[in-house]
Image (cartoon, rainbow, N blue to C red):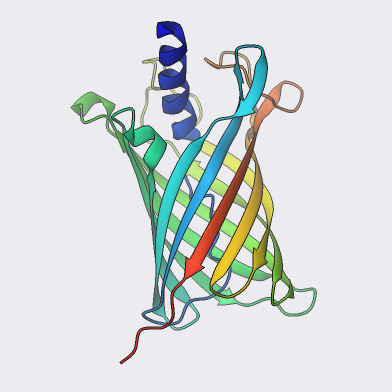
Length: 229
């Protein structure tokens, strides 16, 4: 029992370091003053006992429209890690230079940051993050999207105290979004650090040969009506 708890604790910390951007994509543009709330559940496929399961990382998020149909602000909080005494939050801007038209995808550029700490000075981590998402509107009820998360490691040392070799960590993703304007659902597949080998990782995961880690997420988004003046 103690071994299982330690494994879960360690896994949550390590995998939390990989989950830098929100797994919910606010594809539909928000009006100025309009808000949306979201939640996602899932994570990297990790070996627990004799089976591989996606870690049940639960995150909640909030979006608020700043510039009509062009810019919204996004914040997220990892609820699962909070249960282990770890604060894990992220914030970003979602800029939409253009919307999808026919076969041409729309584009969302999301610069932001990611913070993790267990409230000890030596464990505080701050990571700049840049997410780029292209998305196609099939119809009013169905979207397909794909993109890449770019996470920049500023620390010279890793979580285990060893020298940090990699300072640009990449995670491509693909997913679909379905539902009506107010309530939508998303399913997303990620490949964490596909350019890095899995040797030396503290947990066993499903990857692609010797590289990367496969993860899946399911989420929902509820969009509120535009604020009345």
